[in-house]
Image (tube, rainbow, N blue to C red; front, side, top):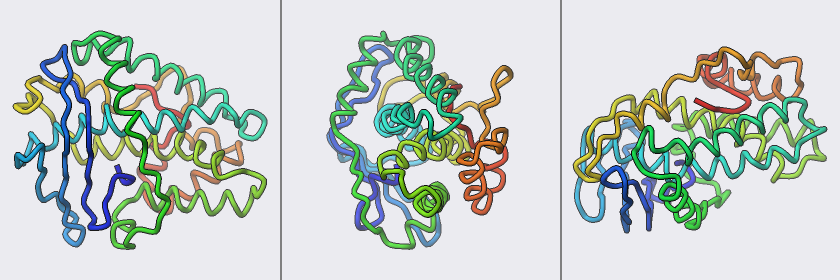
Amino acid sequence: MFCWIRADGNLEFRNLRLTYLDTDSEIFDKIEIFLDHDKKEFVRMICDGMEVHGEEASIIAQAIFAIYTHPHVHWWANGAAQLQGKWQTCKLSTDMTQWMNMASTWISWIFIGNTAATMSGIISHDMDQRLPFHMSKLDQKYAENSKAHKISTAVREEMHAKYPSWTDAEINCLIAATVWHSSDHYYTTKYMSWAGESRVMHQDNSLLRQALFAPNTYYLNKLLVSQHLDDPICKLIFSCAVKVDPIFAKNWLYVACAN
């Protein structure tokens, strides 16, 4: 969500299509999330002119993440396929990302209740709003409060230094497939770890929360970046992440995510 931060440090989302009444969807013209960066606290949410607090705000924020912002991470992560021959863990990462792309629409009836066609329409609409990938330098205070931002910045700098032939787009795809994807799941679970029935969306988001943000535990695949330290790219990513958040780096940083 860091990309949707305004110059004043608050988040703004426009023309969102979110799930509604389980089987339908609804357009929300404008949702704002106000933050206190000094206290590192959520202040309030304004949803189409209505002030929202507490659990309701958390439920809506999770829906924004899952349906509006996170698909952009998948879009960039898809680009990791072009890294064949440059990143030895590329195929494993790409296969898992593609599996999750399909699952997000074709099994949405399990955790939301809508059809694949409805979910595809929702995601397509929200992707068309585009990612405000401004790449501008935000106030350092905001950046310092984002561990994912600090990790991705460190990875970008190290990649440019050690692999100067890599383009910005290739590095963005690598970071999306690993740091951004993993941190989206991990930090959302950590800081917004509860959800129930939404009065605004008129649906129970408990299953959505469990399906999308549940702890990622894999039994048949080694997907942790720390399990691929023989791969020089994974080793670089891990070394950058472990300095910022050792728990995340060792336990929740993956080469791809699939719940």
